[in-house]
Length: 175
Image (cartoon, rainbow, N blue to C red; front, side, top):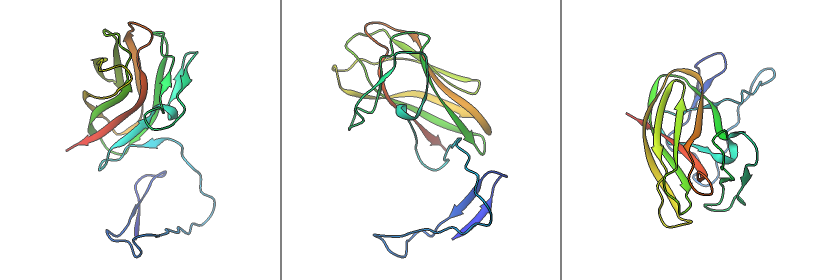
């Protein structure tokens, strides 16, 4: 195992490809002094980043939540254009990500939303498959500059009872 300081706040820990015990491996880090936790989410450049709706900052009133079970870990009650969700993210280097939005849409078509990361924006329409079915929609590719930025998802048009029941937004690194 090796460590490398990336920034004053970030340390990379490189682990061996094969663990000493395939069923139960423990990593112990010995540190000097107190560890100050930074709560800003880091974007991984080598695996899918899942931004769960449960973990988002909710803006606006009257949001509710599903019960958290499989395909019911959504934010519900998205009925107004001034309601939106956000996550604060940090990218250690500039990168591109494919955006996949997982949600459950009602039976009404015509709703639309905007995803913004820093100054980059993607607009998409809500797909309406069979009522109650989970949709994994490729929304497009977005660039993330190095540093801290906010990712938001906001309605641009709401038709029917609500925009969607958002489960998660996935940021998948694009080589």
